[in-house]
Image 1 (cartoon, helix red, strand yellow):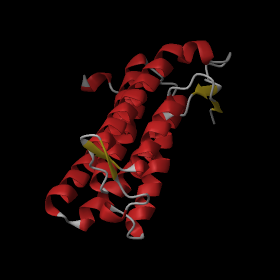
Image 2: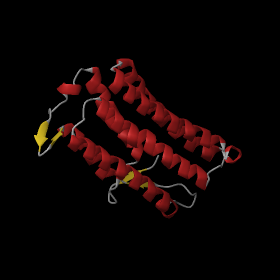
Image 3: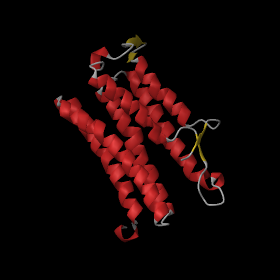
Image 4: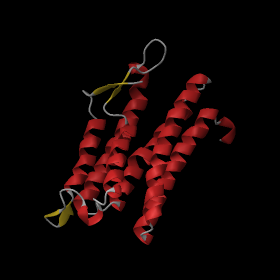
Length: 198
């Protein structure tokens, strides 16, 4: 396996490792209450994005685009830009049952979006092989959620002071802020929303 890896794949694996580190940091914050762990997790997600950008650039520069690299990229992306932002939302105080459902749908949409991209990338490519646009929001756009939660945490508007509070809905509670995850997930799987690819 290691002999089959290309230079770009190393950046892809660093992306996935950073996302995993972020998840672990948010888990540590939930268990220990160590604020530093939350900030570390918050910093590792943008670092994962930098690795995600670099893996594509290195692959194109070295002309090393491969099916293995494409699959690695999708798997790393779901960890860093799907599960890690959910862990951040949970650590920030969105821990109601309906919040968890919103998170689960968000991750499922992210998985679906990446799978669709892998299947349709060839059809969407131009003569040079470059994909011209994304169908639906690309999953790294979840960094918008990360920035929002980071700002809320930085300003003290988190945990029990999350905007819009929370309310009971049947047997479970909902933080309306968690609905942003749901909206982001729906935007990722939209077929009509087309985002030009840089």
